[in-house]
Amino acid sequence: MTDTVTLSLAALQRLLEEILLRHGCSADVAACIAHNYAIAEQDGAKSHGVFRLPAIVSTLKSGWLDGKAVPSVDDVSPGLVRVDARNGFTQPALAAGRALLLEKAKTCGIAAIAIRNSHHFGALWPDVEPFARDGLIALSVVNSMATVVPHGGTKPVYGTNPIAFATPREADDPLVFDQASSALANGDVQIAAREGHALPAGAGLDRYGNPTTDPQAVLDGGALLPFGGHKGSSIALMVEILCAGLTGGQFSFEVDWSEHEGALTPKTGQTIIVLDPERGASAPFRSRVEQLLTKLRAAGQERLPGDRRYANRRRAQLNGISLTRDEHEMLLAL
Ligand SMILES: NC(=O)C1=CN([C@@H]2O[C@H](COP(=O)(O)OP(=O)(O)OC[C@H]3O[C@@H](n4cnc5c(N)ncnc54)[C@H](OP(=O)(O)O)[C@@H]3O)[C@@H](O)[C@H]2O)C=CC1
Ligand SMILES: O=C(O)C1=NCCCC1
Image 1 (cartoon, rainbow, N blue to C red):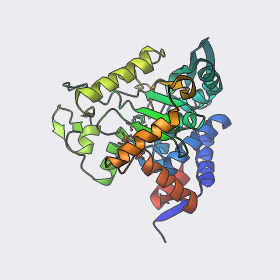
Image 2 (image 1 turned 180 degrees about the vertical axis):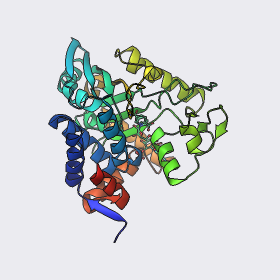
Image 3 (image 1 turned 135 degrees about the vertical axis):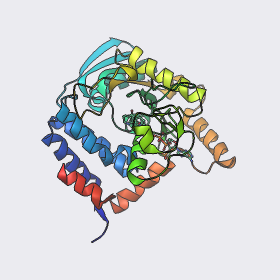
Image 4 (image 1 turned 60 degrees about the horizontal axis):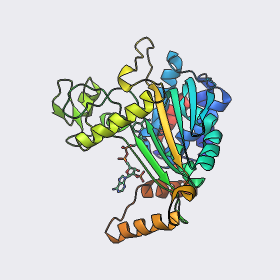
């Protein structure tokens, strides 16, 4: 018996959809979330692919997250869409406001969507890459639950607060980066604990505020550090302000699921700003992007953000998505 099971994207998506339907999601929500986690797995986002399904199921069972929520979309101004996810996942809330956001960005050249009362438990690039495929630049931020200390502090206040950016290119796939503002994503700490790997130095603190490379010590009441000291800390601060202050959602430190045993997803907010480069740029935008990327390659940067992910995607499109037998059995059990 082999140690892996290979599935097509469609087959993985169907399996995830069935799990979500069985645990109380509506058909629309199940399809949207299954797509999101299947493409994350396909592109090699191990920390935000099928790995997340047990925690999603446990959260749905706890009653903390509403898998049937119907988002409400509010056309606030020529440049702003607000969406109340009504305690559902973020991705269906984004899908509900997306057409209006695109229309505004095309009309004004710039527009934003501010989503609140929303649970984002996945990777951010699936949110921004499609905007770049529609010819727009997109910048997105999400906050989560307090697991990251501010620079110089010992108590967690921030989430791992990722930021993602996508821009169209001349002929290639969009250029996309998507990164936590902490030294590591919490998902990678969980994977390190499960697999018995040490964390890199400078990523975590134990419950007493001492530096540690033990992932379990970080998970048992410890915390993560921002990447790059005060610089990552300020990015996490900005993410909180854009995701909670602006949207009306909660700061990471306000997330309180204590009355919902088994809850693991953060109810916070997400903001995405999109720009139409055809309206704003002073020179042909896409060729200017290519000039910069050519210069980076010439300067010795062999790998651009997104290269690994696109390579995984191409491999999976040819050969299917490979899950370990344990991962596949975990999904079947759910
Ligand atoms: N929902 C939430 O609240 C949270 C979600 N996350 C998600 O976790 C995922 C992982 O985050 P994180 O661990 O910080 O990401 P990584 O550090 O793995 O990667 C960050 C970015 O840098 C790129 N990159 C990595 N290595 C190189 C390199 N050597 N040269 C050039 N570019 C490089 C990656 O491209 P590539 O993709 O091609 O490897 C990616 O765009 C993200 O998808 C994020 O959205 C994280 C925190 C919270
Ligand atoms: O990996 C992380 O860090 C997180 N991912 C999903 C949401 C919570 C934080």
